Amino acid sequence: MQQEKERQDTTEQEQLKESIIRQLQALDNPLVFRRINTVLNEKATLDQIQHIPVIQQLMEEEQQEDYQVRTHQSLGAESALSRYDARTAQPMFYLGMLSLLLIGALVTAFTEEELSPLFASLLPWILSATGLMYLIFALDVALLFYTSRRHNEQMNTTEKRIRLLTLLFPPLRIGSRNITTGKYIWVPHWHWCKVNEGLFVELKRRFVIPMIGIALLIVPVLIIEWKFLEEIHEKAPDLKIELILNSVQTFIWGAFTFEFILMISISNRKLHYLKKNWLDLLIILLPFVSFLRTFRISQIARLKYATRSFKLRGVITKARQGLIFVDFLQRIFRLRPENEVKRLYRLLRENQRDREELQEKLKEVVRLIEKKKKQNKAS
Image: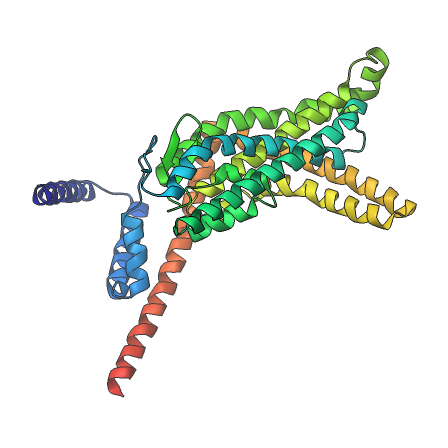
């Protein structure tokens, strides 16, 4: 079976090689020739350093990248930790979503200048529910560690840290992987999914339209707050407009946070994802700046500082709304094919230049390695 697969792979490679040769013979684009030459130079450079263990590991990881979406995976029930994960993954995922909405409501409450009286009256209940969420997640972590110690089973180190961080921010449980290997994640409707590039790309594609719609919700909020709020109060005094606005902004913040937590958990290049989605991260973190400052000011309990705090809260709220609107414009801009073609082509050119610069740096490192080897032989 293995030999047959190897023969099939060899045949496919030969066919691909012949196809490339035919295309090269018919090619007359100098830009493509330049890129092909860059790739060939890269191949020659890699051949010189592929004996280095770190390079070997990176090349193996690149070859093993999986672009197939693998859902409804079975984790097996051979270990107590796996059985615990299988029982708790679904309820803890939805409890993570609930805790995200509760924390979002608290964030809104402590960052809005004008809070709906009804929303303010619900705050004690929201605080109590949030406290209950923290207790549930603390119990989850305690049971997890108890199960691990009782059955003498090891937890994945990275995932263990994530579970501990849920004690500080329970919504992180949304992006939690399986505790034994950290290679699978629970997603609604798909259940346990293999964490790979295919899952990342598919979820990213599915988030595009919903997140544009959610970001679009900030537009009526801005229009009402800037232009029609007083008029609505006069013409419809019974309409709880502040409650509606507070709830919409809580939902928007929760949606951005949900997408970010899930996607960065699935991404195997987390720093790259952070750099590419820094605007989303800013939208998520900005309210906490106001919240922490308000908390600190309330401890000091001086009126003039409290006044400054409320002013800062207003500025930060407007900044967050503006960032959400900018994020919406970016997302909608990418939907237009003409704009997307232009953006992608420019990005391709920039990446090509970066690739050539990195190629030169890599060659320089190779020369240093060869020089060092010659010096070691001579000595």
